Each structure stands twice: as structure tokens, then as C-alpha cells.
Image (cartoon, rainbow, N blue to C red; front, side):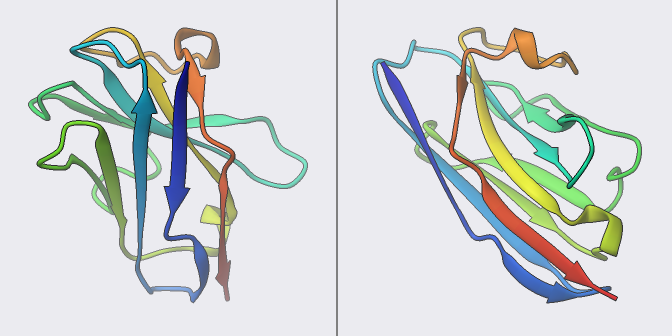
Length: 125
């Protein structure tokens, strides 16, 4: 089994920044992609970003492109996402995800094998 633990959520004013982190533990495969989804109140869960096992390939949702940056840590079982120029519409619970393949760009929840518990990000106007 694989466990994902997120950290770094919180409350920030519009225009501010936050950094989310996630660490995977347990029976991970040798190469696995990681990423983030989010779910705002009353809305469906949506894709935010993913990054390949070696950090060489990243994909972003259109509405975060240029504001969010996803990265892998030196320990390949970690992923972080720097979120800049935050907007009230970025308010959501952010979920770390892991896919047991080296590269993942799918925007479908079904293509990710493990999920974290989520961390709340609130952006005030």
C-alpha cells in the first residue's frame, strides 16, 4: 500500500503565495508520476498539475499555467507545488495523487492510483 501525506495549505490573501508538499511512503514502484487535483465547494474534483518520475515533464491545467509550478524533490518520493498570484477561485481542497507509471498527463481521476487526504487552501479577496 502507498500513503500520501500533504502539507502546506492555509489561508492567504489574493495575490499571495503558498507552497504545497506531498510525501509518498510504502510500496511505491520504481518510477511513478505524481501530481495534484483540487475540489472547490460545490464543484467536481479537477486536475491541477502532474510531473513525471524524473521531473522532466510537467503538465498544468490552463487556469494555473504560469502561476503554479510543480516539482519533484531530491528524494523522488516527494512532490511540491509553488502557487503564486493566488486568486479566490483557487480556494479548494488540494489532493496529492500518484500514478504507478513514469509519465502521467491524464486529467481523469481514474488514472491515478493513490490519493492523499487533502489539504485546504483558502484565498481571501
